[in-house]
Amino acid sequence: MFRRALVIKLRHHGDVLLTAPVLSALAAAAPGIEIDALVYEETRDMLELHPHLARLHAIPRDWRSLGPLAQLRRYWRLYRELKARQYDLIVHLTDHWHGARLARLLRPRVSVGPAGTKSSAFANWLWNRSFSALFPVPPGNQRHTVEMHLDALRTIGVPVASKTMSFRPGPQAQASVAQRVAARDFILVHPTSRWMFKAWPAQRMAELVNSLIARGERVVLSAAPSAEERAYMADLKPRLRGDYLDLSGQLSLKELGALVAQARLLIGVDSMPVHLASAVGTPVVVLFGPSGDVEWGPWGVPHRIVTAPFPCRPCGNKGCGDGGVSDCLTAITPAQVLGAVDALLAEVR
Image 1 (spheres, rainbow, N blue to C red):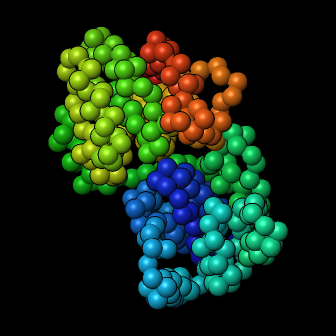
Image 2 (tube, rainbow, N blue to C red):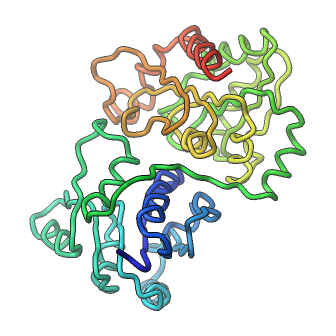
């Protein structure tokens, strides 16, 4: 089998978290293997405390904004750091050229990456020649992202006996959240996403939250501190009636994970907190509009997916006509979501 592996995932937070089952599957298939990962610096919290991770390497996302000499220096440092680890397996899980270059430079015994879909025949040839094996990536919304990641292992003959998601926030984040949230019997509502075309209209979300508060539920709100998400929360909160706890824009990624772990239920849209819920075992109700629920839905936890019956979804566009507003989301009613919440609570009670 393999002695030391490098798993490369240079994408956003949720995408990185969804690589966790690859680490678990490798550890189960090859007892004693050392598994490293390479991610962007801003996403390192997603894997940093993973129980099967030996070392975590991180690079800046703004690599290309540096001058040529600075880029070369950073790449040389990264190359030397990785070369010293003497990997005999590289698993590259995106179509980023960094992974292809490293597979060529580090020369592991086995390297696997996604089959190339580059813009030219030469680019495809160069990409495909960078790896000793290629795994297929089916078109959108046909296979969950976790399964597609695990296909990389299946392609090279590694048995997949474990598909476990895992996220560990750490004791400091857990203690911080415990100080902020005294009660554990609460519903967490995270209504925003990095891409706001995935968010439900604030008026509809307010109707849902008000219904939950009116029937006596403890509600906690969370959101990222970006300008777009702050603007959404500024629109949402004046519409709310009754008591709730607002933690939006106040939590680190690890604290958010600890908060999700404490919640009785998460209500959200297609965004990273849904994957956190999957990783910490929290039931989740998630609204999907133009993005694919088969690819990006909850993994391994009790859940309900709420959609509207539009034949054009999932289109993958940034709203209808790329206009930022998705009719398939605005058509979802608060009654639909409340029904999904009730059904899920009855299931897990």
